[in-house]
Every structure is written in structure tokens, then in C-alpha cells.
Image 1 (cartoon, rainbow, N blue to C red):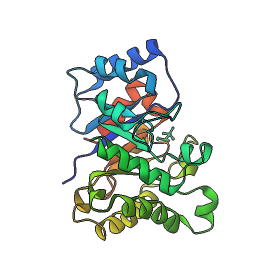
Image 2 (cartoon, protein in one colour):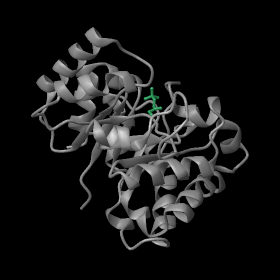
Image 3 (cartoon, rainbow, N blue to C red):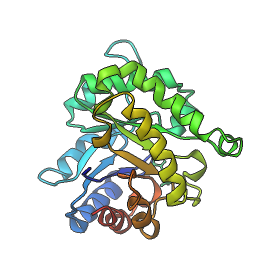
Image 4 (tube, helix red, strand yellow):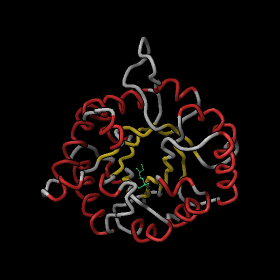
Length: 246
Ligand code: 13P
């Protein structure tokens, strides 16, 4: 039995005051039986860590460098994230793939760097609307995951995978539970061919998850929780989604 995991991806939102209010709201909204985490902008990690002291809510970042250390202006290493107590780091989010030209290999290298420092990478895969319409959903997500499997080899069982169809992110369009389940099953099968741990690995769904669709999505056999964008910015909504994963 896999324990559900719900992760809030704050993206580039918030400030010190609004973050404090949101985290206080989360303290009120819990506890939940699912694992819960928030992935916050780099500058706010330390304060988030402080605010969550003694809480069950874990925290992490939204990206990391593939490099260990050195002259990489503007980059943040996974060692730094580990130093701050991050449990998770999102890698390969479609917004980074699209706006920062991150390719499959770079995403895999970032996942490897994170694991090397004990930070669990949440590796995102997902197809665009054009790719779905062209019948390429399966081949796209399999190609994205294959790069990670190839790079991590025997460590692949340590990641969290997230299926985030690009067309469902921030659009209000959600993959139906059946559509999402179909892709999750494909991904699970690919993991099963690579690791004996596949059945205990968590595959999250992300893309316009809201309190009113979370129960159905999380009820599917291969959907082990969610990666939540917009709804993670409101404590009541995020709390309700976490409850839906109970
Ligand atoms: P939304 O929940 O806003 O669609 O965003 C999903 C997402 O990108 C989470 O990483």
C-alpha cells in the first residue's frame, strides 16, 4: 500500500507576509494521513523551514543545478538544498522545460544530483496538447522517463514521479481520472521493467487539481497523490486536497 503524497508547488508566487499566512493556515488545516510538502521559491526556503518546525509538513525547492558546485552564477546546488533541510526538489517541470530549454538529459542529471545529496527529486513528465492530439502521449512520457531511468540506473526506485499534462497546467482543464490513470499505468509499467521497487513508488498527478476533483483523481489505482499549483496558494483549498488524499 503506497502512502499518498500531496505537494504544493508555489511557483513564483508569494512574499514573506503571504507565505507566513499560508503556512499558518496549513498548520490549522492539518493534520492529514497523507504525506504533505510544499516546494517554495529559493529565497523563502529557510523561513519556511523555520515556520514548519515541529510540523508534519515537509518542504523543498522547485529546481536545482545539475552541477555539484562552482562557477555557475545564479544556480542553486542540491547540496545547498540538503543543507537547508529540503526533503524534495521538483525537476523537469514543464515550465522549466519550456522556458529554460531543459531537455530530458539535463532533467535526469538534476535528479541524479539531488539523490546524491539525499534530496528526493520529484521528476515531472507530460505531453503538450499538440502531442496528445497527435497520439504521442505515451511515447513522449516514456521518452522523458527513459532518460531518467538510464541515468539513475539502480537508484530509479528512489524518485517520485509526477505526470503533469502540459495542457492541464493552470488552464482549469484537468485530465479525467481515467485519462490520468491510463498514463500512470504506462509509467508504472515502465518503472516495473527497471526496478523491483516500482510498486512502492509514488506517481503524482498534476494539472488543475482542485478540492472538487481530487477525490476522484486520487481514487485511481496508480495515482498516488498530487502536485498542486494554483490551489496550493490557498490554505483552505490545499488542506481540502490533502484531506482528499487521506
Ligand atoms: P496547477 O495546479 O495550477 O494547474 O499547476 C500544476 C502544476 O504545474 C504543479 O506543478
